[in-house]
Amino acid sequence: MRLPVSRYYQFIFLRSHLYLGVFVTIVLILGAGCSDFELGRAFEGEFNSQKNNKVIGEYCTSCHIHKEFDSVEHVAKVRLEYRRKLFRTTAECRICHYLEKQWIHNEVLRKTRRPREANRGHFKEFEKENIKGRSKN
Image (cartoon, rainbow, N blue to C red; front, side, top):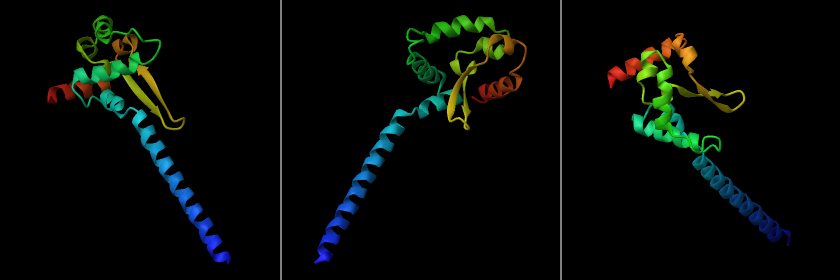
């Protein structure tokens, strides 16, 4: 008589694991939907400049501090502070702003190439890479 009871528990055990697996899969899918893969691609310059700016601008305005932020006005105003050609002529947010991944702490930091450092030539390698990229397009 014990055999049918053990089959019943085995059925319940397998069924609960199936439900748990389905639940975990749904959570992982929804969690991946919340992460923003497009943002990283925009900072890498994979889209045209308008879409890069749109994605980065939406990311900035999602923060309560930059709720009223106008990226077009900001680019026009700030690029006058730069003396280096790439920074002075750019129309893209990603030239001055970038993301730095810290794998150890599992964090992504938002960074800025500030006018003072740029004008002193601290980002020459970055400038060379981006000028090459512009000439290829």
